[in-house]
Length: 122
Image 1 (spheres, rainbow, N blue to C red):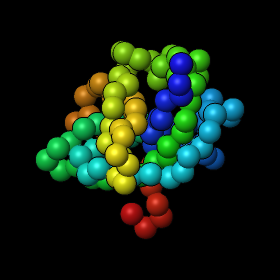
Image 2 (image 1 turned 180 degrees about the vertical axis):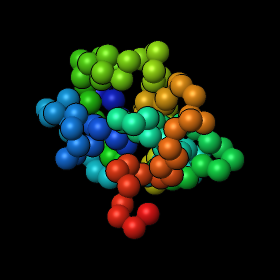
Image 3 (image 1 turned 30 degrees about the vertical axis):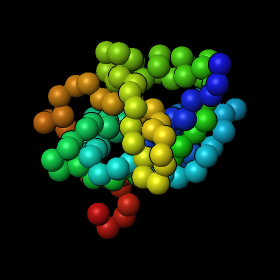
Image 4 (image 1 turned 60 degrees about the vertical axis):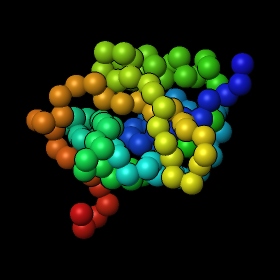
């Protein structure tokens, strides 16, 4: 089986607390989604949701991961209860990647806009 391209936007990014889960996988580079997503903050991790009306180009990273790692990430992301893995369109790429989309209610969460952690001055 081939490897999967995964878009990460939170605790799995380089320098963040769960990046070790991607330690032996291939970092492809920084990336942005097409402008139909938003990030919300749950209090301990960011949550990606689709927002076709007020969406933004969310900043993150692309990784090439094997199926064993993807299964481990599914457990970490509590798929399918908390997050669901689905395709996402990435700016400048013809083929989509996969990303973890939050399945909970976001109206009570802090709106982060297009990135996590927030950049100083936002």
